[in-house]
Image (tube, rainbow, N blue to C red; front, side, top):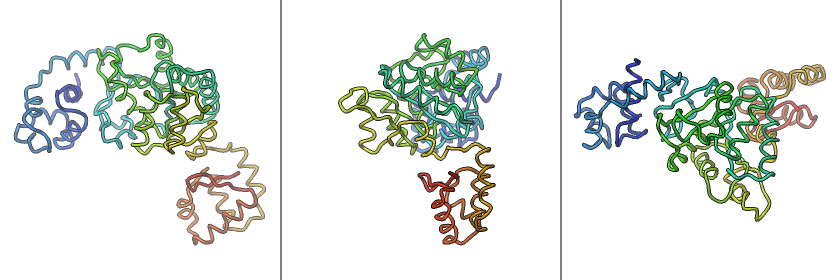
Length: 366
């Protein structure tokens, strides 16, 4: 038995000790085992650790921990403590991120591009088509994972079409890995384990209580670079996820709907209040995120056409050819040219249709 894992799981079970306190304790004592070996006086040095919390640690009953260890080993589940390199690193920037996650899958949770897709459980034909077309537009992308919540509706459509288009997809669950909810997605979930994965902060035996879903939503929001809201009413998990994503400084996008359509009220609200950018296709998101990439064959042809450019212009074209979309500040660093020289060269190249400007001061070859 992995002794440190034993104490890591135990720490998540201690009453009155949530994720924030657990992280502070581990950082103070160096490990989860160090927390349980600490004396009451030492524990009391942590801000906010009153008698109730200290007694919860000192008097903790470990018998349930062994059951969880056996479940993990039997089902080949990968526990991810917050200081594990395989833990989703983007989540670490969120103050309330889980101290421990349970994962079963093949996808690298630190893949360069991770996109969350959420929406109503009762999607319309419009929402279904938008989601399917959007994911189809991502099929040529490399190093991308589609994340959703494995629920009915948009979540299921997102996972199903990700698999159909050869994209890895991860489902974040609001319960333990000893069950699949809804049961209708059990076959799909098995396929996802081989082409993505299932992730949760909840131990085995945890049922999908209503209170678990907002916690699930914060993981979706926190581990992704951006969130796409396909279709949503005024209330519900999708808007909660979008609000959390905004709080985490993630990019949020939403498909617009008809005025008065109750299934699009949430998306229209997000767009109207500038909490989400309007999106109509995958290309909209890829450009806004700086993820658009041209095929190498296109760049090879372009290099042959640029023989008459000035030296500074050729230098910029070569950088864009080698690196793809690049930020203006990075161009300054790589060219080591005067700012005004770079600005003039960029303007000339743009006027000639050789390069184009993307949102966020990014440049790429046309």
